[in-house]
Image (cartoon, rainbow, N blue to C red):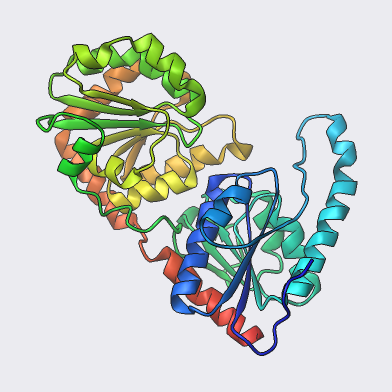
Amino acid sequence: MSVPMNMDGPIRVLMTGGGTGGHVYPAIAIADAVRKQRPGAEIAFAGSRDRMEWQAVPRAGYPIHEVTVQGLERRLSARNLKLPFTLAKGLGQAWSLVRHFDADVVVGTGGYVALPVLLAARGQHVPVLIQEQNAHIGLTNRIASRFAARIHVAFEEALSQFPSSTATLSGNPVRPGLADGERSAALETFGLPADVRQVLLVFGGSLGSLALNNAMEQAVNALLARPDLGIIWQTGPRYHERVVSGLGDASERNGMRLSVRPYLDDMAAAYAAADLVLCRSGALTCSELLLTGTPSLLVPSPNVTEDHQTVNARSMIAAGAAEMMPEADLGPKLAERLMAMLDNKVGLARMGKAALAAARPSAADDIATDVVRLAEVSA
């Protein structure tokens, strides 16, 4: 591994976190904020070759180094027999990376790949900072919190799960410019008529959600019976063809008020157009809803570890920024619930105001300031 040594140069920051966008994109946002504060900073990432960080990090302009990892199967599985050997290999790669990169600080944002890197940093007396996106902490951050110098959390509910002397409520770093969209331009972006009075935005994460798609297929005709409603519906690439085929000419029949996309490239425009969002309650999604002041009906995924999406949703409800609907209640009840929320314009306005009040738009900068401070003390 040919990684340059630190010879009294700029601060050196090693970022690690991966597996899902919820871990990767906060790490990139923090790295961008560090570079804004210290333009000469040397920043590199550790990640897994077969997960999304391997493409997302280079696209963001940062080098990435491989650390081999394997998730623990929570049911009996022969794959778990390989785990000790995979962990040993990953720890060796992580130890070598931390040593040769000569990191001044290591920043972890969760995911299996972060743990060996954070353990290697601890073993080499390099300060560690971790960032937890969810209201309920993940396994990697739970372990790393025992030796992390600084801990940043996105939800107040997570503070009590970490040592009070090192934990800070800072929010989730989100992509810049997300709240800068303009409604009329956004309607044009999605091909919706300029005279629609309300817009429902539906998405289930970058890959889409089968449960949300199935429920929307049942609800869409009743929703489009409202002549002033437009719908932006992100299906996810794997479901798009089937959904579009099932809808037939629904958009043409309803005055082009239905825009069905496999993926939403311009989330700033999507949020700018939306009066109400139907979506999952992943950590970054919740933070984006707060930052953009967008009312939402959250449907937590029941298929995530330790049901953390439900905990996130409850935090949003406690802030007055959202309502929640269990996945088991989707189906015929969905259209009725959405229309009741759309009819309650006072309630939507109250939700939007509460979301903005709970938002933490300076999260990336605040965390970056801590990263820089730790690096400068260590360098």
